[in-house]
Length: 129
Ligand SMILES: [Zn+2]
Image (cartoon, rainbow, N blue to C red; front, side, top):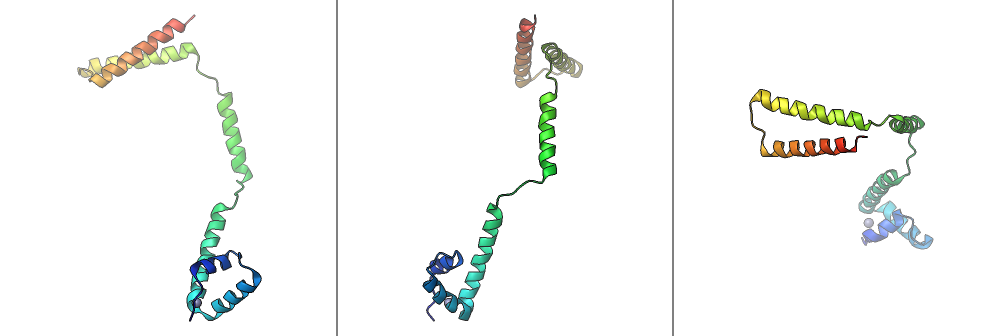
C-alpha cells in the first residue's frame, strides 16, 4: 500500500490541502490503520498546541487581588532617612556585639561587609540635615 508522506498527513490535519487532494487522502486514511493512527497522533498534538497557545483570561478575582496588592505596595510609606540610619546602626551594633560575645575574629568577608556597612552609615549621616 502506498502511504502518503508525513508532511501530507500534517497538511491534511492542518487543513492546508486543496479539497480534491484532501478528499483522496481522507479516503486512504479511512482504510489504512497506520495512517489513521498517525493522523490521530497529529490531531492530539494539535489539540495540545492549541490549548497551550490559546489566550487565557485570568479570573476576575485574581485580577482584583493583584491590583489591590499593587495599590497596597504603592500606598505603603517608604522608610525615612532617619529610620534607615537607625536600622543601619542597629545592624552594625548587633554585628559588633555578636563578634565580641562569641570572641571570634570576623572573617575577611565579614570585615569587608562591616566596612561596607560602616561606609553606608557614614554616607547616611552625611546626608542627614
Ligand atoms: Zn497509509
